[in-house]
Image (cartoon, rainbow, N blue to C red; front, top):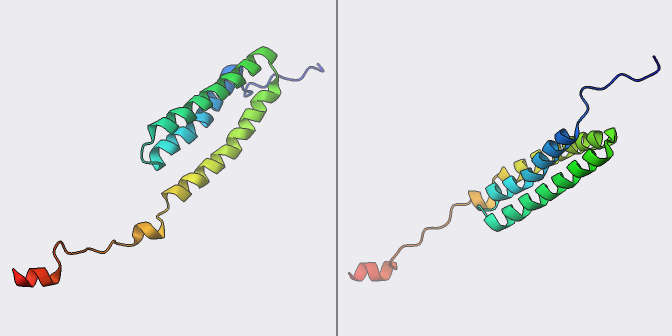
Amino acid sequence: MSQEPEDFNAFTHWDCFGATLMLGLTPAIMNFVFNDKDLVSTVLLAGIGLVVALVVWLLAFVTRWSIIGKLVNMAGLVLTMIYIGVAVYCWWPSDEAEAAPEEKPAMPADAAAEV
């Protein structure tokens, strides 16, 4: 009777892997969207996210510590707020983008009058 009930909402090692992979791939996707489709840095960021997800999966698989799932869940909560803030900041139009560039005539006014 003194045994604690099993938490069915706790993350397994596969849940930790999936959540960490999604959190790791989000910066790569945001980099692709907001940096003019820069493929090299996007692939680099995605590779780093995959390596981190594999390390978390291996750690959760070998140790079976329940704290790992709780830490991944907490990191997901914090990183989601950060990702939303970065996305809003990057999407917000800047003052330089709103200013219309001056149109210069193809031919100076003096040359156009002579023709």
